[in-house]
Structures are given as C-alpha cells and as structure tokens.
Length: 336
Image (cartoon, rainbow, N blue to C red; front, side, top):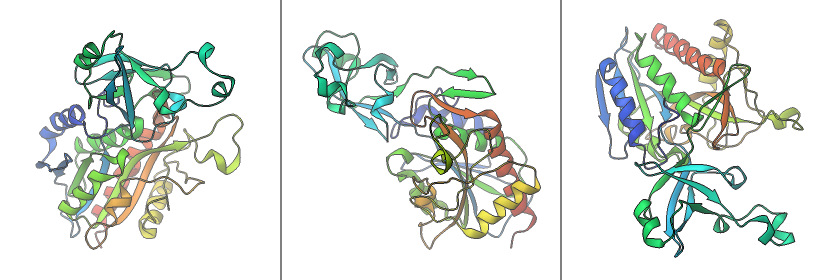
C-alpha cells in the first residue's frame, strides 16, 4: 500500500495522510512541521533519559513537468537521482488526478549512428500524454506538476517483491508496524520529506526534536547481478539488512553500529555491510543537527533502486523490523 502511493519529493501529501490515519490511534502526540515532516511520539514501558528517534523518508524519486511543446508533448526534469536508461518507454502518473503518460524519445530510424550508441540526454526525452496541442497538454499537466512511476506491484519467485518506491517505504512500513505495537521505551518517529533531493526534511525534524540517539531505516542499493563479482555487488537481497559503518555522508556511531551488530547476532537476524562506501541517508543531516546526534542505520538491500521496478526480499524487510525492535528493547533495558 505504501509503495503504491504517490509521494515524490515535495509532494508527499498522499503518503503523509495515509501514515497519519494509520498512526493516529496508536500515537500519544503527532506534529507536522513547516517542512512537511510527520513527527509521531509514542510512549513505551520506560521513559528514557535520552530522546530516541527512528527516521524514514516518505518521498520517492519521480519527474516534474517543465513545459509543453506546441504539438502537445511535455518536457520534464527528474526529481531525485534517476538513471535515464530505466525510464525510456515507461509509464508515469502525473498529478493528483494520476494522468497517464509515457516517456518517449526519438525513434531509432531517425537517430544517427552516433546517437544509437549513446543514452539520450534528458533534453531528448519527453512525456507523451496523447495530447495534440500545448493548451491540451497544459490542461492535463501544467508546468510544476509532479509525476511518479507506474505503481504496478509484482511478486517474484523466491519471496521477492518488485514495485516502485521501496526506497524508502520499507522504512516507513517498519516504523508504522512498530507504532502499532507496545514499545519498550518512549520513542519519536520521524517520517521525513525531501530525502531524495538532499536529505532536506531530516535536518528540520532533528533540529526540532533534539534526539540524542537516532536509528535511520532505509532501502539501499544492491548490485548482485550477472557479471558483477566481489565487492562490486555491494550488498545482496535475501542476506539480511545492511548495517552501515560509513557512507558518503556519515561515519556512523561506532558504539551503536557494534550494538546493532551484536543484537542481530544475538537474535538470529541475518545482517551484512555494504562493500562500497558511497551514497547517503538522512543520517547525514541528522547527525550534524545542533550539538550532534549519535546515529546508526538498518537498510533493506534493493536492486534497481530509484527505478519503476525496484526489487527486494520480503525477508529482509521483516528483518529490518526485527532489528529495529531489538534496538528499542536494548535501549529500554539499559538506558545508560
């Protein structure tokens, strides 16, 4: 349900409203800040001396309409990091009315020999609505209209799931599941906005809540594909959550990383680390908030991340939930 909702960076309202409805019966306090972050507090069995935060971002990558051509096509830009190769010929839904369009490009018989060997630049791609004039195209999707990839969900063999927006509706789903349970310790949950365009919402959420410990729940890039060997595979779906020690934006708190790793082993939760230091999460902004925040993370490995057909193992998503639950239990039992 979460993955199929539309929520590109800056237009997360459908996701936020769903999460609000689901969280309200279980929450002790709910706030929405100026950035649009949904902040939910739930009391646990113990009131800790430190403020504890779990965070996951609501937004997803997508497109935004820039202009219309005289003959009814739309020029667009990407919202967040999207590989041009994965969108050609794909369907998108535009705006709250979910107007259907497909990503088009120059047909091969009109392309030069050089063009056929290259990935078309974004300026050569367009959205085809079926309109036949600028006025009709702008009536259907005016400049500034957001779009998301087709939300078809497919269950694959091996207990795998394929759908858009697994990054990071996995984390949102884990936090929603925790909210629906009795918690061992008082906890804040931040469903953040605009992660895909620079982790912008997380900074405001952390600045307002002043956490001392934060666990970020994410989806992360896996590359375990034919022809890819060794460290280039990064991480592997089906082998448990990724517990990162460092990425492109964060050196994760060593004590919390070791604690998460020990908890996973003690509870029989499979886990792995990434074999490449790259990318980033909301932790990059949260850990620099105010006087600093101790951060750690657990992420589900996702193939074809930021594409219309991301793939993840259901078992990894459940294991992220188990790891987050064990982490809260540990904090509730030893708040030192």
